[in-house]
Length: 239
Length: 239
DNA sequence: TAGTGGTCTAGACCACGGT
DNA sequence: CCGTGGTCTAGACCACTAG
Image (tube, rainbow over all chains, first blue to last red):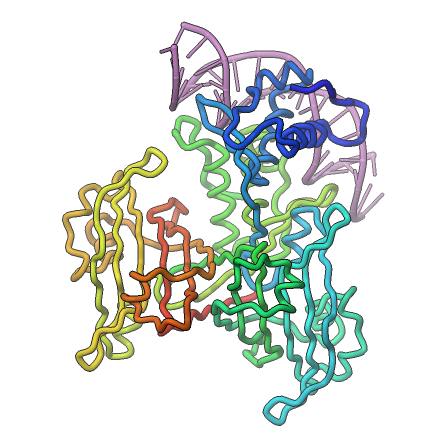
């Protein structure tokens, strides 16, 4: 399959090395859509490693959506887009941690505003990940934080600090519940630019609602626009 | 960790059994947000299996975003569980009853199909309400019901009988959880006609996923398209 | 230092698909 | 039948974290 071989002394795990090699072949077009890859046993011999390592490398390709496997038949190339999964509201940083990726936050707007006679700190952020040196923004979050609960919250740098951590650590306020409404929205040009949505796909998912503390006091009004690189998943228990 | 043990003679792979057991513990709230799970070695001993199997089970949880792992520290729970879901999954009829409205169901399609080598009964329904003599359809539901769990389920009249009631009363199978993915979709003409969507609004919300019983066995694949007359709300508890 | 997850080996048996 | 991927075992050594 390849002239390259694995370096067992390299700090890079063997399965990562192998994953890269196979991926390169696919992306170079040496294996095309629908093609059958060499069998796991074949790769095991070619690269002088064990099946476990080969399977680990291939499983990464499956996760990325580059190949699929069929028992009794083999491993086939199938190029499709992989998306991020949002299991819910919040939990962003932890989820990315599980993917070994770094959370990125860019402040688009921050100022005090008055809504319905009440003062809020308005914070608009583009949030995403940094992977392989590239930044990919996944959501645009707008938060309205009541200034009576969070006096002088504007002094923090939200590009580097987690909003919910500040809530908990500085103001001793703990987000506990949320009530959200979901709607599809039409995208505007600014959003399209930030979230890197291609032009033929013009609708996104928007979540709007509020976050409450344990006493069901509203502590934040939120609005999140989800880009196309993210999947919005929910788990429920049917009562 | 658990009284349950793995059945090595079961056709269900050990790692799937283990995955279900751990997941159940997490979703039941016995392990909460941020909690440390038992170590891989501990589970290996508890369930009398090897670390490979334990790691495979955990890796599924990581993929789902339910836990993340940290070298040198352990495996931690990271979820935000939805406590009450949007009205529909498991509560359509009851919800409408509370509003003094009558649930309406119109069967659009019903036949046996084979998906991935498994036999299902496919049921497509337009669902809505009857109020003041007028019928308003709110959603289009597509259900795939495994025929091994629901033999001969096609004999029922789903225009008049509730699917979930049949599940419970006839088959003694109780829908308990759901895992859903939400996406905005472009509407087609048939859908537009049924859901009475006006022409300028061409995008709707689609929920796709599965419904599970109390043992986290999949009992239904579902797909619901929500019309514009419905608000899609969710309430969550941030654990 | 002890315990954790991360990686890797060298086997094994199985279910499935095509010949 | 043979080759494929799917699962599982019973070890091993490593890097990282924390006390």
